[in-house]
Picture 1: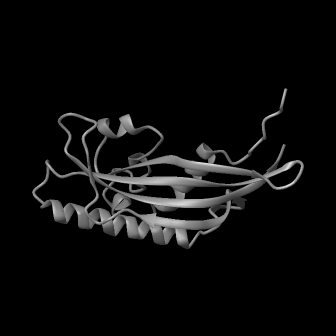
Picture 2 (picture 1 turned 45 degrees about the vertical axis):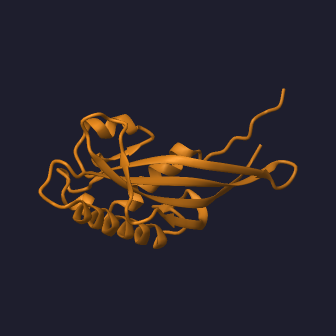
Length: 167
């Protein structure tokens, strides 16, 4: 029986750390009930967005790649996907205004990540660094998964080098 690698920075761990990094100084934080905005950021739980308040962010894992670097060490990359949602049917703003607000917050989140490229919180490092970043086009997309909710969203994808780990 082959023993599976023991990766200390699993996708849930990295996404939890990313959640802490992306929110400060965003509109999401300013308009939230707690002032942190963290209650509007859901990790791999898209359904919860439909039950919460907007704007909201859904964090989930994209592709993960692992490579054996030596006989007992693995290295890898992980995509973290930040989907930023807002409703456009329950506010007086035009859809372009809603999209502009989403774009501004995603740019702030991108700047937050770039200023913490190692994704370090306190003295704990969760990644080696950013390999690539990608923002979806301005128009964003419409989410039709939840009948009765008219959601527009835009995506920010970050590819991280994860910390090497041993088997």
